Amino acid sequence: MAKGIYTNVPGLIVLILLISLSLFSCANLEVKKPAGFAETVKKTEYRAISPEGMLYRVRSVDNYPEKDLDFWSKALKNQLAKEGYLLTKDGEEFTAGNQRGVLYEWGVRYGNEDFIYLTAIIIFDKRITIAEAGGEHTIYAKYRQPILESLKSITLN
Image (cartoon, rainbow, N blue to C red; front, side, top):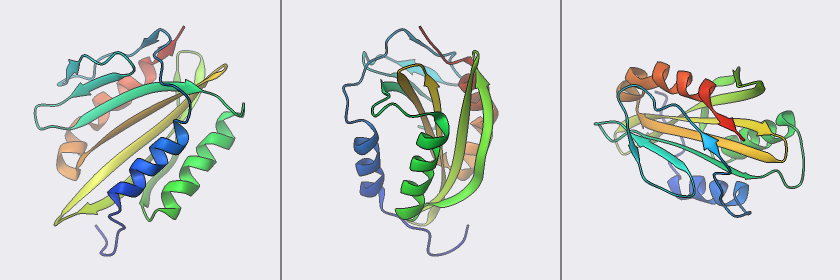
């Protein structure tokens, strides 16, 4: 991966907090467990982890101010780019249930290792569903397809 990739992990935390100003709620969030992952118990969000420690998380927040997928996906893309993350996969669309979603993949160097960070957004009426997964690039590559299949399974009732 290219040198100079921004490594501001705290900046990512700030971004997540900005997106999640409202209270977390699963609101009948249903997610198919990715192959090779184990689910963890967490009331406010869906979490699964691989044996190598790769985390996959899905949560739902209020769509406030109420905007469409294009707005929120551009806001996410702009914020992470501003934080210095290197966009490696630009706006791949997918369908979850009957809703359109978009995912981005980002490169980030942490220490001497290269990591891939996936962010995905789906709008279900008045809720924004945000999915994230990340891991060292070889581990991420191993689990990328099961994560993509899980993204397509997400429903919010």
